[in-house]
Length: 370
Image (tube, rainbow, N blue to C red; front, side):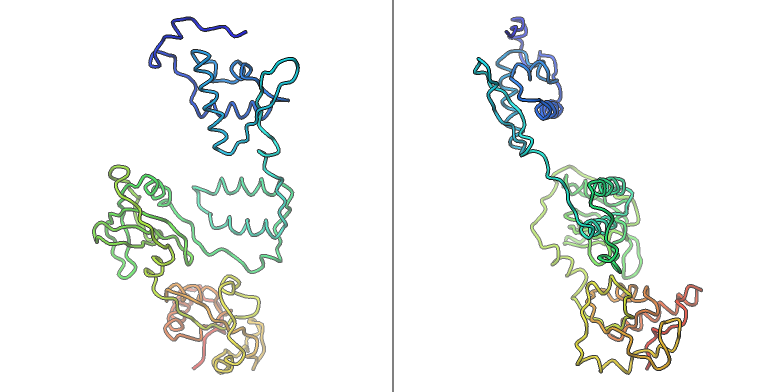
């Protein structure tokens, strides 16, 4: 039989009562207790055994606390069920339905695990790497096995590390607070201070971008986060602005320019990341490029004198000329840019500069003729 607390405790106003356990901690304790009970727990057992409920100053206060917590757990999707305790009493008990609460066993194929492993490589950043590694260890421990090498052959993520700016910017977006930072412009390399209202962060074309409202220019802007030169400083009060509805792809597309097509020749089984977004040139159009294909007379390139057939001709979408040229140059002699002329010239300029520094790709079998 429950013992009523002293009258002084019953009549004490809320401000005079002893502070109880943090509500979140009390909810967690309740979940742990109801998950691990053999059958069910009565209200009295909850009050005496679960930390946080003994702080209730009266029976009525406990009833309100317990009912509120049950409703909160159910609203969070945790199935608290009411059952009879049996015997000669009509007292009710409570437990969490294990079948409805527990996650099903994770059963990933090697290829599926491989895709997750590939996706995890997008987050090679010190702020997230520890959590990502732990998650992958747990997935492998679930029995999915090793990633399938065949399924992922030639694939590699091309998004660079997000950097130190990510954390402060996400914090500012959540609180809707303005930020300031030093930014190096792409067109002239000048470093200027920016004052912006951050809206969203997205990864596109191998990099991370901040979409925001530029207070200095009084217009929406997109900034590449790798060009942020200083620490991001959060300024001003929370809730200082509203984030408008907008299409991420549309805003990034306006910042990057229209999508254009480059035609490239690629050696078989090379440039897997580029192939993932490219499409073959139709056979009927291949002849138009045949005279511009290199003569693979260099044995180190895998060909013989007069061999010009061992190339795949692909169309590759791109937005940035410099970005496309940088990617193409990275494949060295395994890739030849056929058109447009601007991309081909910029690619050759980069290869020539690299060769002059002593980091060339060897004989330039990929250099177009004519």
